[in-house]
Length: 203
Image (tube, rainbow, N blue to C red; front, top):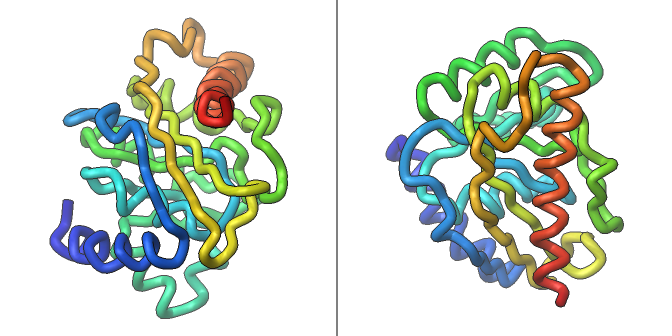
């Protein structure tokens, strides 16, 4: 973890606790070492911070290229190790960068839904195949995280909780040939685990 990333964690964590009553559970499930893909449902532009301020190791998140047009936000995103990606097209540079980060034994943060979906309880059918592709290429485990708030709509002073599940080992993802069907199946399995975390919390 860079000093700047740690500094921003220290700055943002109390702010997010104040503004969103941010809480976290299951933090003991975070892997202490090795590459891992951090996967969560996606409901707001704050999601990378909800997760990033709570996990101990630095996370390299994807973010759409458009967010980097704001110079202040761009500096914060880059400090958080965010990887710029062009939406709606195969961004080979972003894909290569992501796999390199994972093969270097670090964390990458991905949202299987591919875009923000507020106001709706997440469903396994929302998952896209990209997460499966990265897991297969990097041969790494996946850490499921559920971001929960009322009606899945982030509002100031509305409580937000992140729930960290147990890591999903690479071997559980069912890869044999590494084709698109397997990528999609693995992504759906991962997102099922994410959805289950939210349902367990609601019981």
